[in-house]
Image 1 (cartoon, one colour):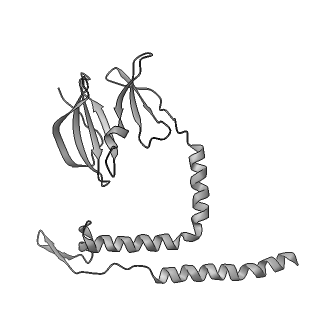
Image 2 (cartoon, one colour; image 1 turned 90 degrees about the horizontal axis):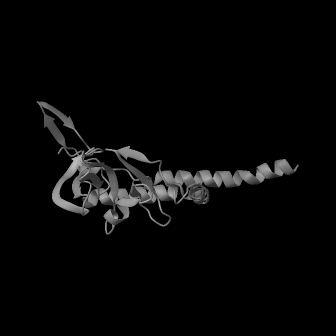
Image 3 (tube, helix red, strand yellow; image 1 turned 180 degrees about the vertical axis):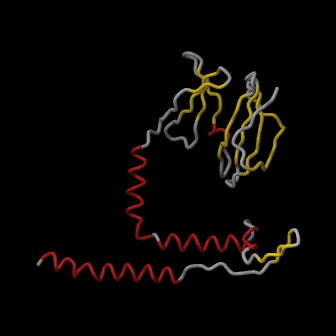
Length: 202
């Protein structure tokens, strides 16, 4: 009898949840169509959503805002589960995690994390005298977004090349540093696509 009663009481809850989801889906933002003809090599095609290519324009940003609001409302019923999972993930991560040492050009390095910092630290290992080689936290300071793509020392270890993304669109800027004084050169290669390795030939 208790099981039957439990099932009967559960039906209205499930129905309400389905109704709420249905109402949310009915308010799904639909991107408007704006016909644009694109011709290349004698072939013309129609792109109704070419206007979304202007990613920083007000119409695009307004539509993205509506989509974000829709997504947030759609998944609002999972907020409790989301917080539970995030808390579990965080508890399983060592805030002071370190990588295994690795060697480049006969120099040994290690990537380290420090509790309270969002970015990694790259150390040059030299016996008991470990030296901070590259601090991502310093490079990210004052930036709304930062990602270190990759880095590579020159064959003689005098220079360092790093690729960095400051806007979050995988548009990397290659910058060069003199390792002796840790000063970065003015020379840069901006807006480089799909860069992961940057090497210096000297």
